[in-house]
Image (cartoon, rainbow, N blue to C red; front, side, top):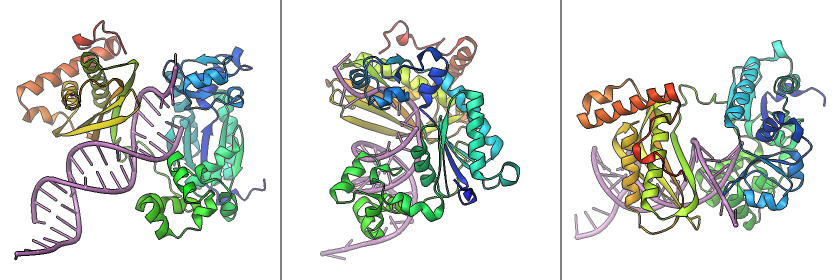
Length: 397
DNA sequence: TCTGGGGTCCTAGGACCC
DNA sequence: TCTGGGGTCCTAGGACCC
């Protein structure tokens, strides 16, 4: 590859089979076997090594199906603490190269290296340096896509996998994009792909040839414009450093699939209590309060509904979140068997000090104090050290 | 024994206010 | 007597991503 890579200052770095690679690093005796991370009872595959993929296993697939395709695979439980540690360390390496890092998930990030040339060389040289460095330090491989825009860099890294590099310079973008299946575009999932196919649009080029107003009419204002830019490779070229002070989280939630479906309101209310405490605790640790409490219920037929209520004031108090969640749940028709429940708090804003207690009555004040005591005990004795009495000894779903 | 758990963004309709 | 728009907030659902 000749090095005209200065026209491709955006790097998308993506770890190869991240969870599986980290797991294998800690279980070297398994490297020659197909390995699946996740996919336990009622679960889906989180990651699979390339041996398992060769047999058809894909992440997101149900564990049951993976076991059918690949009964000889070794199944490992995910170790999120290990994944997070590797992720933090990799992101630090990225920040050595440039401050312009958009961490997209635990195992992916976009880097803008346009300002790093003098110290570190061309984007292509930087990509290879990063790959070598990550391999040396973490013993896992990654792939890098280079382009002038975010979505093209992302497509390129996918095509480079595993353990490769692919650059798509601006003057080659159209030739690269237009033959691709529309489903490959970042943001085009199964539903949109099917819809486009029914409209006779199979390739990215087909979409590109549709006039923008027509596309907007077909897919909606935002989605139409978005797709148009993706099809011409003219999507955004500047990065948004994620999860900084000017980029607060929008919502926090927790959900759980029961080990078997249940219609028992006592079991469900107890689960709502546990999830509310988990969410509110995370909010307090992160310094957020939020006004809208939402629950999610998935019935045994997989039909999924949400119900939400906006409170007069933001809260991070476990019992307030729980009370709102239970009220929403109790407004639902009874008797249907439920597969999953979730609690989410939306409209988060940074909690400034504790001014709220000053204007509230004694009742709420007491619960906020109780939460603080629980948080303190959790820090000293481990999370879950103090819990509501109804969660003690109860069967976890 | 099909189908997790964490999120984000968009749309659409109705309420409500000016 | 008949009939306005625009803006914002709230709620529910849907699509998508890793």
